[in-house]
Image (cartoon, rainbow, N blue to C red; front, side, top):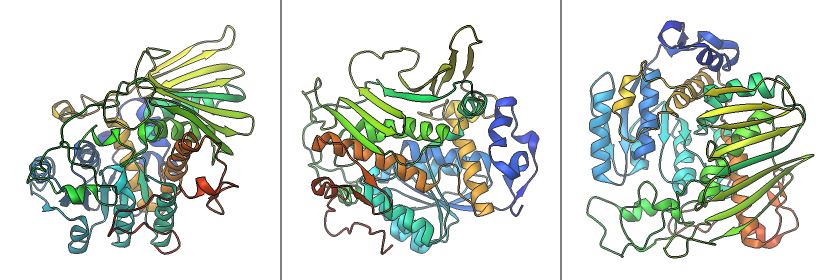
Length: 455
């Protein structure tokens, strides 16, 4: 080991946490805190950007030296909060231009918590600047952005961890090891994934003047410039395809990525999808309110369904995945899992691990997802371990690309009305010129779309 020492008692909290730490491999239980102080920067200081940063501060000695956001109010508030959290008590340097932040500071790690349409350019620029990167999911808004991100991570030899922290969720690690890998399900030939949250922010706010604290041009960046109709943060921007890929790109990517991890799946052989705006037609939102998608593998279909209206098919699992095996069924979500055996076997139930006593500051953090905090802490430790060992993290950028691109191509299938077969070697959709033209979006001038051959 290079940068890590043994400090078991400071982290271990029950058998599930021990199991989660054991997933780090050779370093296993010896990985807790690094000796060095990591120099860290954050691009995008909104709700989840700060949440990721605060989880990193909790598990490793870091000095947050720079923050960047195009919203001055959000940026200044984040600066104060970080000064209260980090050991030095210092307010980081504050920037409105992420490229200036990268050029003026030498950082070990850059966290990216901006909206989806900015992820590709910022991740690529950060690894070029010499930093390892933690980037939120989905990694990109089009398939070729993702190809360029993978190419950049490999070219500049940097670790890039994607914020698909379900792979670091203690009770899901338990389910993988003790249910799936243990063979309790038998052969698995059908998977269902779903999201029935009413999360499609569908309104009709009026066009108004841009406030002086927000650089809306820079916020929009390479995306189309929509008329300004209010602060885009949190849920408003996600309701437009200009900035992301709808509920499928936002929520399916988590569940599909987790299923692929559990079942050791790579690229789907075929992707098809149907859906649209069937019910909620009264507002500006242009993302689907109803959608089904099938990700096909040999003798296995992974089926996605979302509705932003009505009720879930199982109230206990409104955002979840279900593995159907010949010997039983596994229901799983961010909150719990239930194994139901075929016949008279024993049912198994596990709940999410909370760490409220160990990290009481979580209870005072605005808008924190308490169920996700332990998973994100483990995800950060896995990220640091990969940097230390010069290895691939559990949510490596290539895995994030496969999951993200598959969800994007489900939307392309819905748009074209045809199944999508992607060749990841040739980086093209087989036999479909129209769909191939949709693999890369047009960028607004003067921004240039990244090219995997020229990163």
